[in-house]
Image (cartoon, rainbow, N blue to C red; front, side, top):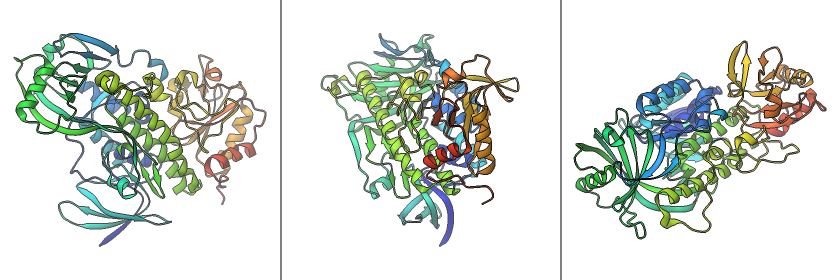
Length: 543
């Protein structure tokens, strides 16, 4: 049996696994990805991509490619609303315009794109960055020891078996993760509350939209509760059905015994029209759940995506939360594998991502109940928070963050109020670099970044000394210095420092540390910051 060695083995090569692979590649780590299916997604599985996920795609150079494909497929900036049927009474607007009121927060926009279009884009970029992807390949068994993970993988067609020796493994193998089950990690939460189906159809339903710009159409009527997504040119789409009948005593098992004839009846009830010619292409059966794993790490194995958290589609948070998992663990694995950080840094993945994910799961559940299943409402259900706070305002509190006088961040907040508080996403604002407009976010992605204020030359010198003498990847910039200009004169306010202060941003764009003044500026102070975050003193380049 052939044996190969890789730094990271990723099990599961759909949206989250592929995104994690390209993020690792962006940090110079070449993972192996094994995927049970023979290729990328074949079902549309429409996904809303949040601003935060688009920012992540921006850092790896595919934001504009994804935007272009999205524009080809869906009407942008549509509404999210509830109606009795596509031809029936309009009941409520949840979001009047997908990007209304959030354009100031980011250079990136919320979009819709199906996984069947998105995953090939991720695959191409992951391979460009050095990832190896093996489809039609399943993991037969695995075991871990103190130094790594040994897995047996098997090609489904040829039967060829390979032994993979990896330093670390990431389980992106879905809601019914065999890796998670093998590790004995429980899922905690609400469990399964609907045996749902998604009915994929073709037919010219454009006239039923009556010129309305609608991104998501929730349908609630005496026959069913669910939601529509319809693609350009409005001749195909899907209807997801959560439950049937009377909402006071609903039938929540839509899946059992569903015939083609019954599926067509449900589709017609959602459309509200018996005359439009439509045909059903496929029906996907799935469980609506809202659960979070009790831990995201077991030794050298990490859970990400649906293996770590499952949530109903209400809000469109599921896949995005998984991409953010990958974004968090990728840079940490990279610095540990390169010997620049202690392995203990990896424990901050669970500490940071599990609370953020659990909050998002509960927010998705609250939206599901409010929009689709009021019969599930209970006293301890979380109140619905602003979507923006969930997408861009989640906070981290771990040893990879050094709180300042403002203390650790809350679990979530309006990102406009974060002011670069350690543990929050570094704010977006426009700067000029060599006469070209950029976002502060364009400075982040691969390295640690030290951003000093216009009077922060002492921090610049300290940062440059650290960058030149240590192996830690650190880029140093001074706002209103030689390279970056702040035409709005708002950097100091946006980042919560004095003109002589500085902010250290992690490779994932989260603030690790902040000095509001230059009072303690020195290479020694920065080295101590890195020692605290990485668990080790930065290594000298001469070492």
